[in-house]
Amino acid sequence: MGRPVRDLRISVTDRCNFRCTYCMPKEIFGKDYEFLARDQLLSFEEITRIATAFAAEGVTKIRLTGGEPLLRRGIEALVAMLAAVDGVDDLTLTTNGSLLERKAEALAEAGLSRVTVSLDSMDDTVFMAMNDVGYPVDAVLAGIDAAAEAGLTPVKVNMVVKRGVNEDSIVEVAEHFRHTGHIVRFIEFMDVGTTNGWNMASVVPAAEVVSRISEKFPLEPADPNYQGEVANRWRYVDGAGEIGVISSVTQPFCSDCTRVRLSAEGRLYTCLFAVAGTDLRAAIRNGADDAELHAIITDVWSRRTDRYSEIRSEATKRRPKIEMSYIGG
Ligand code: SAM
Ligand code: SF4
Ligand code: SF4
Figure (cartoon, rainbow, N blue to C red):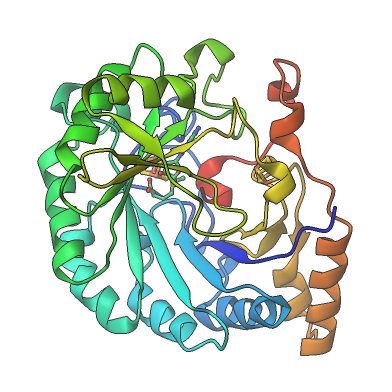
């Protein structure tokens, strides 16, 4: 389909200290759940080697994700290694914010460009029910402040919107971050994996998010920053900043999808909704040299035909798919 590869998302752990109901529901990710063992995870050297190979193929953006990436011990060291990779001009990380107050400074010093912090409501009762571990809003806000102070800007704030759960928080979240320079991105609830109980009725369309906010704070469309940008940008008419909406369900953008994903154990996936990946860890640990690694990567990418969001239906949601906490968001 002629799509270039630009954006590499690396999951550094499948573990998380939250149990967001739309991502790692407690009934599945309980005490007995077997997470990856340490030797199954790619080492920082292995991750950097793969990232370097992708940079040579045209990747300019790297995002660290998970699970919760700040739970991976020594993550700052990985950031420093990736910041030194030739061709990577944007190195970011998506986090639930819980360890950000402690780590923002060190991450910035290591060379991280900016962060995205997830926050689904300004209301403690709603937010605690969604993260399902009783984590309060204020602690995430403190993490966002620490990131801004450390210069990890512009901070982006991800809010997943679920019908009947946090739709009443949309305007409040938008209002809180007006005039801050932070950019809230409202994300349609997606059927990633098979455990989060997704159905179409629980999706709040991005168009509705825009109209709800616009009623109180008028918005106008803004041009995309670059081809393949996932969020549609809207700016406040009164100059208070901008928001983004990610309409992966109601307005899919597969034809512009330039993203590739590396799981914590080194499997390569060309779609968030993929069923199977390519085992780069085995290739590396079996002694593949750089030329062989490049050959695998270009072969996988050139054969890619993914367009899941364009063909999504009630039937496709039942396909076996990889969980979000494993593949990374
Ligand atoms: N733990 C980190 C966090 O929550 O920011 C990083 C990993 S998380 C899987 C990455 C992003 O995916 C988060 O912003 C999260 O809200 C979003 N996400 C998780 N499950 C989702 C779903 N089913 N639909 C839409 N977004 C989802
Ligand atoms: Fe953890 Fe992020 Fe998934 Fe929430 S969305 S359970 S914080 S990985
Ligand atoms: Fe890309 Fe797959 Fe998402 Fe389509 S569904 S935009 S191909 S990750």
